[in-house]
Length: 116
Length: 112
Image (cartoon, rainbow over all chains, first blue to last red; front, side):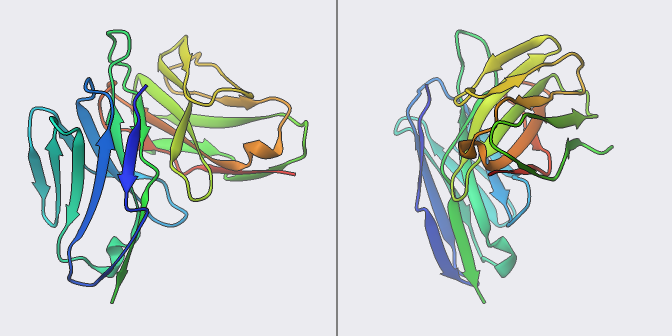
């Protein structure tokens, strides 16, 4: 099955700096890559996603890039704010047996801390 | 529109007891999922369903069972609870297999 690796496991930045989280995946059939944010004690929530037919997607201070050849994708947060502090998970979706079953394989998460 | 709801929020079980974690969604989503999240770890898929009457195993199905008799409900059954099942359990749903997954608030389970 798919294997998603995520780095770093922890990341501390000063408010206003940029943060970058990187993920790699193993299954070349994967073509959907969402990012989830999980605040302490809360549920994971989708913040941005990218599909394999695009290389980059932006939403205000958040951007995701995808390199299908190298099988890696990254989350970029600019002008970080204390409320960006959370655990961020990347994920990849793979096709199984010819069916789009929509199973997501998650990375282990990155604890981002933004210091004021 | 409540989205995905889960009950209970928190439960303590003794070793060997059984319980059912409830999950309901009101978005008419076909796909539903159960994940567990251990402290400091990511999300691992337990079971999933692509529609009423259809379920399949995920990465860590041992010790659990599911059923899907309606589109809205996807209960997770724990038989003979073990300390290794101490975790936070999230239910999620999506409209299509590759669509956004919406998570419930989670059930925190402690097995002693």
